[in-house]
Length: 282
Image (cartoon, rainbow, N blue to C red; front, side):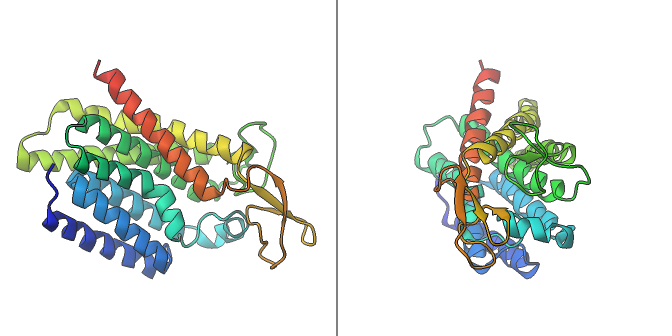
């Protein structure tokens, strides 16, 4: 599709409004708002309404779930760098792959638009599934278990799963697919392009998003950097513990932060979404 200055401006205005609301409700930091505006402007301005519907669905639901049960989640969020106000890097880790796909769809119009959109849905379904699993899983009364060994671990630890978290992940992924279908439906009302064949979107999002979120958990349990603060006897994802002391690196790759895990899992979700599209279109 041709690049529209008016659509870019509308994307900027919409994402700025959502970002400021999220900031007001402590879901984003100021630089997180900047990240949300960048992602929102590119996806809406270059992708179109259906892309915008997915981004809005992600940011709105994530902001609401961050607020939900915040007092109960505060301790785990602080130790494991999850939840709370999301900064620029966290926003880009979740939305960077999606924004890149929007740019690709605009710069290379000869590319298969259905394939690019399916990859976008896979990426956003994955990060939504992971966010919902984290925000709701932290409220579970069940003891979390590490996905690789099934050993009991603390709430919030990377790679930990619960039944509630896994269910929330599937629900979040399906939510994104439904938002994409809704966006395409509204586009069709004005452009007469909506077709029943787009009903594959929710199932694609569900499969790609849920599997992508499981991949996120596996990365978190194996290669994500973990540290130990000896004076406080606390394991953490932070190289400098909340007490201000440097923590000891205990496992994983130092550069494999939670943000990097989120970004890589979103890329995996994009690959899964695109692969499912290719299989269905054969």
